[in-house]
Image (cartoon, one colour):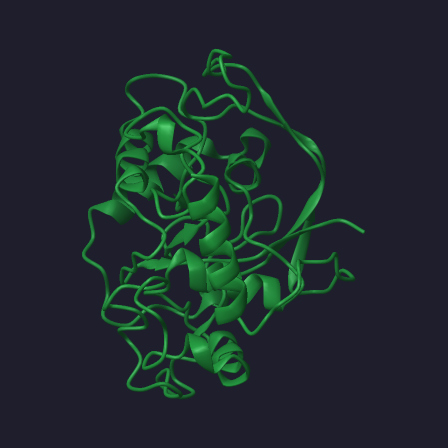
Length: 268
């Protein structure tokens, strides 16, 4: 298993043009600083220690302070990335790192839809591509805990979040996505966590539903994405169960037309 992970990591580094490990960057208006705090994850999670029982589903998890992109990454931003890193263009990306639907909304390698779509969230990107983009910016994908903590919003307006999430799931994917700036912000000032696009996160298979925990170290396995996820505290939280079922079906090379991402960074 370690050989597989090492091989994929080396190939990813090569495909991203030899990008270095993410380093903390100065704060900017494009990112929101989230203070340290606790949140309760939706499900019990795999323990990091072999032979240790999974964590309790109702035990708060501590999240250190971190910075998160205010908006999801846009077509315009991703276009600049593929200009500088040609191996991530539609015609050149390796099948190992993205399926055949990669950047499916784009007309060509360097045509993401023009000015009309430049501020819309980029979608149909694989976990590998999203991770490479974030590393190229000196950042990384947010962990599942960071993403969930951002959406938990210290308990603010969670019933409204649930209602909005279920309404969003019931609507067909639009042909044209709205600009990221039009998405509403939560109490932390993070926009578009509900109702815009699903979002990849860095880690994977750290929740019990739908995951084979024996494959926890394989980046080719199911990756976790975010998208209106929040602490599910009872069996009637249907939106949480729906979301975690979808996540468990993902693999790192998968792309879908409503799956995007945003980046995170540790505070300096």
